Image (cartoon, rainbow, N blue to C red; front, top):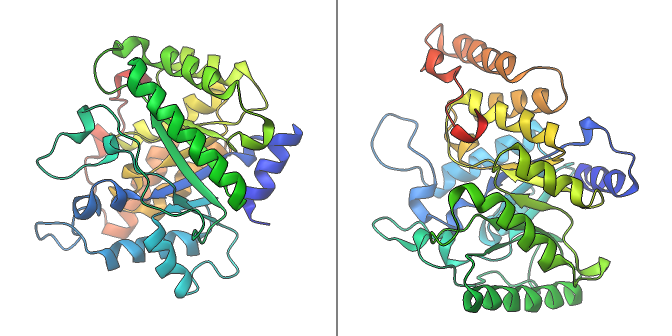
Length: 320
């Protein structure tokens, strides 16, 4: 059993501790932004990294063996499995099981602000992992939200047939019908409403939502303690923002976190992941973890620090 499997089993039994907090590296960005999602080149030249560089980053995180889930596209998982990357690993591989249109980040396009159209590239019958991420976006538009739920039902039935487990990502509204300050509570209601008609075998292993402030997240976590709630990492922000997000979410009752851009954009992604785990284990405060990260960078770069003072600040308004 993977480390994730052991942790989620303890959570379901009600015997988990803070050290069972699930960390996932979301390396599925190729299904959202394509080439532009690979992260900036590390050699100082303009442009983006190639797929091979992205895969090397994934392999490094797997070797480090700190995260519990590695989320990737089906095509990249096939490549990684061919190379034996997960052989003997405690990390659970997972695929992005759908790629709704609001995820698409093609350069010079505006998909992210258009209503979400359900779409799936990956085949569950051919999936090479038993776990995947399914995402939905509600906007308070009856016609579109019903369509979203209808596709979710089709997915669930197919997942049951294939013995496929999933975790559910619910994004904030992206069309402007719901005020930003109301988004968290709207999402809470739509999650509770949408899962109410599901039997245990149909329900997600855990949830993934945006951090919309402590009140909204605390409400969702308290609603049903049997449901494991996780948060998504959001935009890059400062390093302090990253650790503060983890700490605040954990205080609210969150037991999982999936980070993508924050890890990809980090000067040292492995060092960042190490510091993230120290925060969730309660060994470092967010401020201490930021200093830990800066000290590690200084050792690697021979004393040169990048944005160290600004990086100590909490800049995300939802965390302030």
